Amino acid sequence: MTPTIYLVSLILPFILLYQYILLPLFLSPLSKIPAANPLSPITNLWILYIRWRNIENQTLLRLHQKLGPIVRLAPNELSVNCYEGGLKTIYGGGFAKDEFYVRRFVNYGKVNMLCMTDNKAHGLRRRMLSSVYSKSSIMSSASLRVTSRNMLFDRLLPQLVKSAEAGKPVDVFKLSYAYSMDSFMAFQFGLKLGSNFLLDTKERDWYMDAFFGRRQWYFWSDNFSGLVGGLLRVGIHLVPKWITIANHEAADWILKKCDLAEEMVSSGEELPVGDVPTPYVQERAAFRKASGDGGDGAPEDYPYRWELASEMYDHKAAAMETSGDTLTYIFYEMSRHPELQKKLRDELLKLDPPLKCSLEGDAELPEFKAVDDIPLLGAILQETLRRWAPVPGGQPRVTPPPVCSLAGYDNIPPGVKVHSSAGVLHRNPEVFPNPEEWTPDRWLDSSDKQTSEMNRWFWAWSSGGTTCLGNNFATNSMKLVIATVYSNFTTKIVDAKGIEQDEGYTAGPRGSKLMLQFDRVK
Ligand code: HEM
Image 1 (cartoon, rainbow, N blue to C red):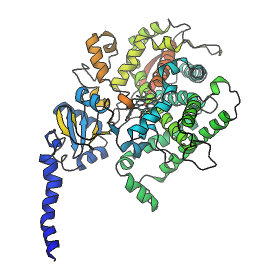
Image 2 (image 1 turned 120 degrees about the vertical axis):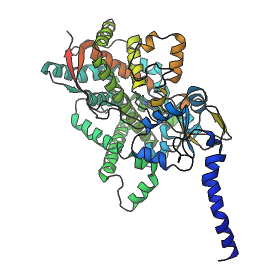
Image 3 (image 1 turned 135 degrees about the horizontal axis):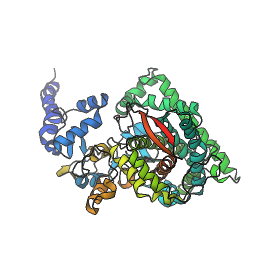
Image 4 (image 1 turned 180 degrees about the horizontal axis):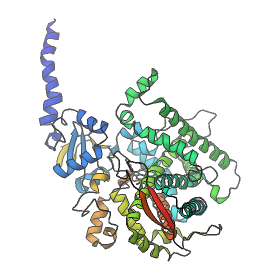
């Protein structure tokens, strides 16, 4: 052994001991923060184990209840759940997104707004895409009025009437997913090109089976994407092959819709208002205006083909699951509270025109604003988004240079992964008394001071510069369907087995099912 090798072998253990044990355990500024587990300061194995068991949300809730607003999950990862020194600093302060988003949400090999980790690029993209989803655009959209009318009166009500008359229960989970997808895609691509999950159950099941199949494998693709990709290159499918194939099919499905929308728009032909692919048209124009270089596609591709497809794919995915889960929980809670159904119906029947069922095809919608302004409907939606937040998991960001302070701890270095979670924030009993209870009245009867505190902690849409892009669309779409259903029907539970919320970044009912009986109100 040469003297150098001898010296290195003597010193190396001390360097490793310092770097991987002493520094993270005792000397790092993070060492003062309560650790989730004795192993957390020195290895991420513990949090990986929790994620592998798919119990992260409930574990974080329990830890925060015990240890307070900030918890160290791994040497370089913190969970922070408070407003001051938490949400305000991380999300209000524009901390950049973590690589998690790239691993989960890149489509066609192209980043979209949701997975842009560079703040400047993200801000630019957001400015390009947001105007079509602003509240004023949604409330006044002519195409959305036509597509919404079609969803409610032509696709949804006739099948609910049929089920009610036959005394047949309805799987409201599937119905909510189908409505959420159709109502969004009809806006995105127009009625002609949008999905038709409400009427075409084969198309719906094809899409939903692949969607739920994929979810079980997120642990591997989120945490070991390199390994998954590497093994795939040598023909080994860690994630089952059928899921890879289904992913390709879903990607082709949306790409085809983009190609058809492009053909329609570039032909210059005047379209019936319900067939106008409104967000596609506006986002296409925004891309062309912003750079004019045509994007990264091949010469034969139309400009920005892949950038647009990546955004379109992401938006429809964001729309279906979140709104589908929220609607399922609204129907569930309303079915447990018949007195609230009656109270809401009394309010809804004041709409002009009311959303009463007409199977003759001559029904009209009231103004969106009139539906939006019903306080009880707003409270029902808000409380459902609180109690059953459809994105309950952590939204990871990265601490910026040089240092920052979080939840009373100073000198937190750059590059630390930090996240807050609606599932924890929404269960703070000091802000939301009896947090496990679903109580819409808390949004109607609380003092101004209490309401403003609840609003600061309410985080279903996230906050800051990366808050949900589609919140105005989703709010309008969900309010319309709830208003339509309870103007015409009462609902009661037939089978709610598996209604408890699953785990994950996004999460809905564990059983993926809710059977309700609809009875017509004359
Ligand atoms: C109940 C319905 C919905 C809920 C609760 C919801 C919730 C959220 C949340 C919590 C985020 C932040 C995610 C994160 O940073 O980790 C988000 C982002 C986003 N949502 Fe939604 N969402 C809903 C519906 C929609 C719809 C209909 C669209 C369609 C346009 C949409 C598009 C997006 C996009 C593009 C982002 C990324 C925003 C950015 O990075 O600037 N969402 N949503």
